[in-house]
Image 1 (cartoon, rainbow, N blue to C red):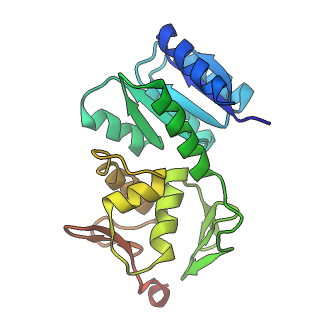
Image 2 (cartoon, rainbow, N blue to C red):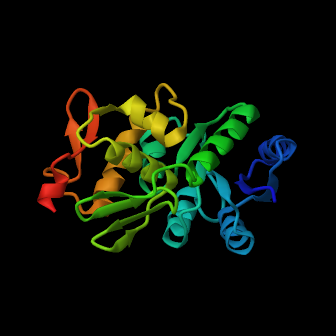
Length: 232
C-alpha cells in the first residue's frame, strides 16, 4: 500500500501543485488548510508524514507541530516563508525533521519526502543492537532505551545518534551528521544539527556543560563519548 502524506497549507495553489506531484510519485495525499483541520486529519488518517506550513490560520504550524510531537514521532517537514533562521531552528527544536523554504520546487518537496521517509524506516540489514553502557540502540526496531526506559526520538534524532554511537570516539562534522540525518547534506542547513544535538542531549539527560554521551569537538562537530561504557 502506498504511503500517506498529509499536506497542510492555507495557500490552495501550493496545495494543488504539491498534491499533484506527490500523487504522480505514487503517494496518497490528504490535505488541510488550517491548524485545527491539520490536527483532526492527523488523528483520523494517521499519515506516514506531514508537510506542514508554519503560517496557518486557526492554529499556527509551530503549535500544530508541538501538539503532534506530544502524540507521535511521525516525520514532519515544515514549509516556511519566514526568512529568519531562528524561526526555522525553533521548528526543528520542537521536533520537525526537516524544513523547506518558500518559494520551492515541487520536485524538491517530493525528493525530501522520499528522503525523510527512507531514513525513518528501519533497515533489516542494519546491526541488531548497539549497547553502550546503559544506552541501547536497536536499528531494526528503531528504538532507543536508556536504563531500560524507552526514549522517544524523531527520525532525524535517531539517525544522528545511530551514526555517532556506531563509531564512538570518532569526530563527525556537522555536514556528515546532516548527511546521516537527511540522506543528503544541504549547504546552509548544517547548523540545524546543533538543534538536533541539543534535543538529543536533553532526551538522554546530558548536561549541556558537561555531557556524558555526546561531546562537542570544537571547530569540527560532535562525537559519541568512547568512555561511556566505563562511566555507566
